[in-house]
Length: 218
Image (tube, rainbow, N blue to C red; front, side, top):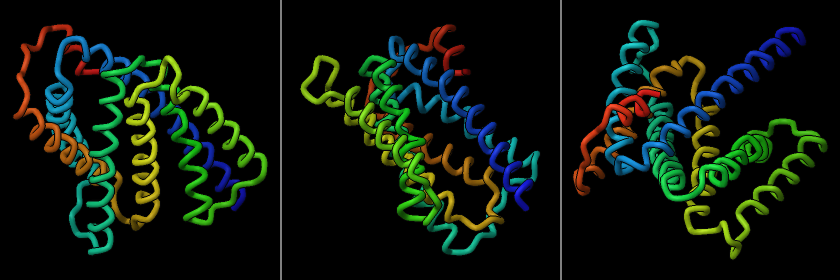
């Protein structure tokens, strides 16, 4: 039992490390896009491609299902709202503040998820982890520095994204085990695409250069 638990923890840590690497590439590409395309247009176009790929991948892996309980559908719907809000605040921060500052604030996500898991899900967090979380939060406040030179209201956008991602992840833990993660990810992609698609109707679109198309593909 202990061996299985350790193996699951290692697998989870490896997947988290891989996802963070992908997020880093994504963030860099989105920051580069801010020089060429409006935020709503860029995210909407990426959302179309993401939704299509997620649908095809979910179908190929047999991970697309819709026979869930009302409780799971409610959790998925609330999770989608949190995902859309997080995407809006997250991308807004990246488009309008230095990427180093925004990324540093977003590094608080693992800290907030761990703390929220302890507070709301009863997960065990020892004093060492709790101390590390407090030190991490202190570091984030030093980065935000209200009133400092690097502070603007988009720093608060980044903090809002951290809060909403924490809510999203807590809701994910509450879903039934038989709800495929691919289905949840597909609905997330569609929700973000629809939101930014509606927003893109009220802005002036710009031509997409070859460089911008490559950056959107990362």
